[in-house]
Image 1 (cartoon, helix red, strand yellow):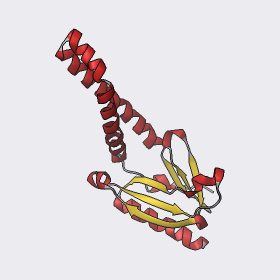
Image 2 (cartoon, one colour):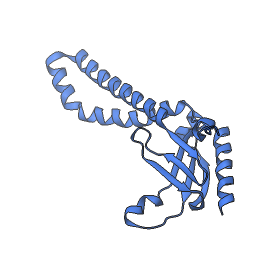
Image 3 (cartoon, helix red, strand yellow):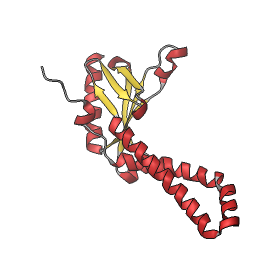
Image 4 (cartoon, helix red, strand yellow):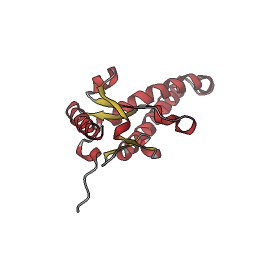
Length: 170
């Protein structure tokens, strides 16, 4: 029997997810860099002049953006989700490989949403709500799981497929 195609290849996230995440995270990192570098930039400006100050700031910002873009590319390449026979498997941390298996009978609700940045980039996310069971070390079972960066068409198809699997199990 041939291996089935993983769901993340059948309904792939859009590549624009790389730029969306880079934009989101880089904006925060650049702001932090701007605040933290004010002392260094003042020192450079005092001894070397305004041109060096501008070069230090632009170099730091460019370094942050390029490093983040490379990280997001790896995140995108390792992003994984699959509809199994009895469970939905989602790799929630991309590079770090934190995989969560959700039995279909634990899925409470599946919804489609896009925040303002997602809407700007034309991508949608699936939010998968699951029932909370246990406590202590099982606390993470209460968090919602997201499948990010899908086109609207793929998001709707994937949501329908997940809901069909949930309906069969309940």
